[in-house]
Length: 232
Image (tube, rainbow, N blue to C red):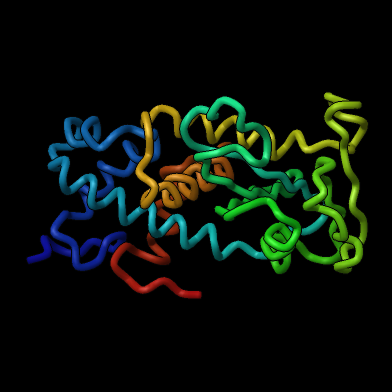
């Protein structure tokens, strides 16, 4: 039976006091084993809570409002090392992640099957308001964004201009790719069926990198606790 009322994790077998002791470890990005050792909660229970937290975080990320203003778009590849002879957007054995970065704001990520124009247009549509100025590299998959109704589309040619040219750059989204790959590398391989959740957790951490993540999580869970159906 549940051990008392826990407003952050309803119908839970863990007390609210112990749950609050566990959350700083999650905020600090400690492993389940490290958290269990520090809190006295079993590794199995910690893994279960971490899984539920990641699912909740993914839902919060997916509910973000459309991005607006100066927006950067790009894709990156996650997974094993490149296969020799396979380079660039055709790299083999990689998970392709498309990203949107609103300057001075947040990032949004989406796993995509390829980098074709139709796929990228679908990923952009509905996530970026038409009044936005979109920055991208020179990949042909981004052709025709103005024809879709976007106010302006500016490109940066990395071969001709490896560094930022005034405001024309995609440094913001590239900063996120660097952050994501450093963080995910510490897991020494992530199973395909949980990659999405780890990606979304990384997105959430990046978006709150200047905030007290412990407080952010408790505030969010007070509104939408674990084990309660999420509101749309």
